Length: 475
Image 1 (tube, helix red, strand yellow):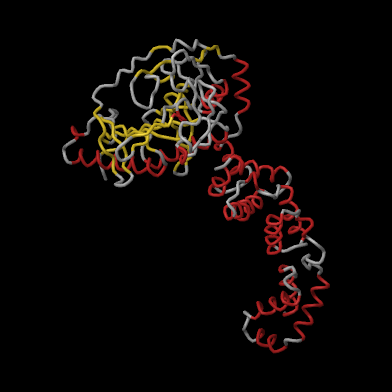
Image 2 (cartoon, helix red, strand yellow; image 1 turned 45 degrees about the vertical axis):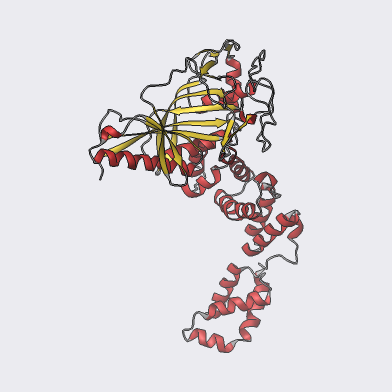
């Protein structure tokens, strides 16, 4: 067992959903055509002035509240000055002195228990343009310039890759539940800077921090953390602890390793100062309260309800609450009277199976909770069997017809005891040799008799009642 342990801090950059960019009227939409959603403000033409997008401020405040952060009295912006080809202004409008949220904390579900993760701050800023480095040239796409970006910075309180991923998945869920962002990594809407250091087990003094920039998927974040812990620990155990230096690295997908980019002996002086073109904006207390009321029940809250009140296990609960739209559908099933465990089984097995097979979103799913209840109620009444119910479910979804129209008297399950007794007696009278073998110890012939009943009734005999009658008759 190593005498060293890791300390991890994360900086998550997430693009927000809004019709326009954070400081300009340009369309905020993912577009494969480069430089299509651009205006003079995004390109920093002389004489242009930024105008704050109120919707972006609202979503930033909502996330701040969801993270249990402290909100500022005024919404203020600052300039972060540095030159880079993807920054047309030569500075970035961000928040430095007065972030939209500070000193937060959330609980994540990790390793079967609740673990607190401390939030240092969260701030609203504009994204840069996108650079694409080709063989002998670099292209610039200004579609991303000015896209609203929330940067969330944790305290150095995470201990391993698995815990980091559990935290990020929780944050992704919060963004989606609050409809703040799609968090689509394929569109570059989530990027992460990973800070890793190691120290001797039990020591209160943090080791030298190494930063890995712009890691863009959950799997790569986990690989980055594991690689850095292994690399730094190997140096320390070889007596080369001093060779763990403060630096910026990048993750190389091809090799699964991190690679040195630049030294970071001193913090870069960005010469922050208040943005002169955006005066401080007083945040109305009533508006804050209105925003707080819009925050839906989040994953942790629903997890407690599903496990303690509905009696679901942790595994099923985590599947349902992963997507807010799924959780809302499930809760509507409970609301209209479907048993929680029955609703859970049908949702996870039948509904999610159908959605995945047909590449559908739950919003495109034909059957409403009320339709599902019709099918389940007919099973409970004994009108149809489980097998028939699944066939009706699939047919109703495929043909987009109400299950009620598919549950006809002809297709109903036979649950009439007198009718089943008559059918079973005829079968037994015609199979005397099998009855004798059954009584001589070949008890597996019981399934033969059940099969004969199902054959005679074309699978419509109620299996429970059928087995009860057969047991009585064979005795």
